Amino acid sequence: MGYTLKVLNVSCVIFLESPKAPDGNHQEGLRTTLSSFIFDSQEGTTISVARDDLEQVLYRLASAATDERMARCIVEKVIMGEMMKVPTHGLHYFIHALLPLLRKGEINTGEISTNGSIVYCEGTRGIGFLKLEDALDVASDVARDLGSATLVMRNPGKVGAFRVYCEKLTKRGQLVIMVKNTARTVGVPQTGEAVFGTNPLAIGLPGTGFIYDSSMSTVATNKVRLAQKYGREFPNPVGLSDTMQETGDPHQITTPGGALLPFSAGPYWFKSFFLGIAIEAMAGLAGGKTGRRVGEHKGKRLYSEEGLMAFVIDSSASPDYDAYLAEVELLLSELREKGLKIPGEYDAEQTHFSVLLDDWKEINES
Image (tube, rainbow, N blue to C red):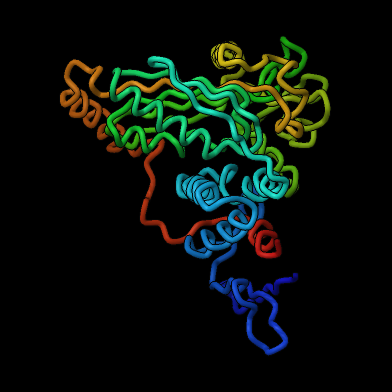
């Protein structure tokens, strides 16, 4: 099924239209007509897409491959990724990481159980969005009753960006800390090879919009792949070549033997490197493997053996929660006054997203 790209005038307003049926009308359920501005970015040419249009296309594809509850969870998290300006875990992630697994029926169907303050899930890999969402809901309820809860998941599968799960708990007045390991992609010249994965860490502060969510690497693996796809180099070194030389060339980073750098480099490389090691070990505590035993490379991540832990602490554990809310708001307000954007805060009223033009055309042709 092909789509037509029409450039109408110098303002670069475009329409993407689905093919017409024999009667001359657009085929039912396939029309995606919108006016948008296109421009070049570091990752490639992007297009402004209406949120409603994106939700409709995502749900059509997801619901064709799984049940309604799972489909709606996936769409919600992907849209949240776009709203929070995490394009590596928005539409692009849906197309290249989730949709192929949906069509294969690869879904995490693990059972969730509790034992006191411990919530456990023995995962089955695959897409783990709904399973992680449900497990965090259980952990939240346990924390509400007991003050705190620890979620332990083995083989969680693909769960996207941590930050899209945190907001629900922070709005309940709960602190949430999440860690997970991935197949190894990060190394330093001292190790001579990649030792651990991007190993994300997320911290959501209760009663605020603050959500810190970062990999232990300079950039996400998907960002390197996008730069490689569009022939762009990073202005600063973000990885290592197969000879362990620092580079911003995505081709050298993705070459066998190449690696991403940890986010603190130079003489301070050890600060983020050993934080990544700590997360790797915590994933082992959750039942995952570590180092090369997790899985040899990201492309096989569906079958890698990963671990995830989350810690939920309820507001009832604070000696004076109201005083905390007042104090943290003063702190965040001071940062805003200095012109800093608070991580996790976003415009919930967004009506359009900037997505890669290639991705938009591809998803409409699916």
